Image (cartoon, rainbow, N blue to C red; front, side):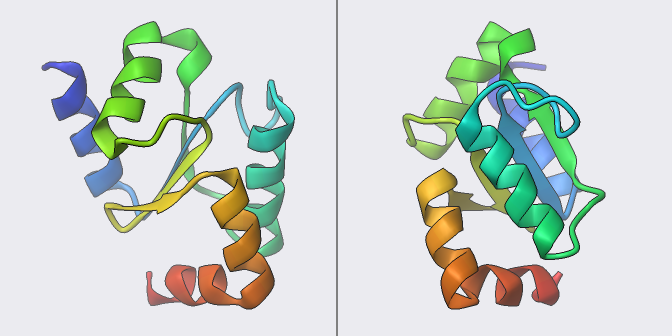
Length: 103
């Protein structure tokens, strides 16, 4: 399976997917840590995460997949939501909660 197929399989087979640096228990950058805290604050404690630091092919592949240059990247129900800044904005205005509750 090539990287793009693997990513597509990951984002479509889990309701909430976060591509991040590190793990939810041990984020390796502040932006990834913020993304985990936002999901947890919304009651999403059991989400699928992918540590891009452990796989260089996925690290570049996810940027190509979404045409988005930064990590973390959040996917809900197979759809790209955005990175850390977008997550913060959507969390603050209630849009992210609405997206998650549709799940």
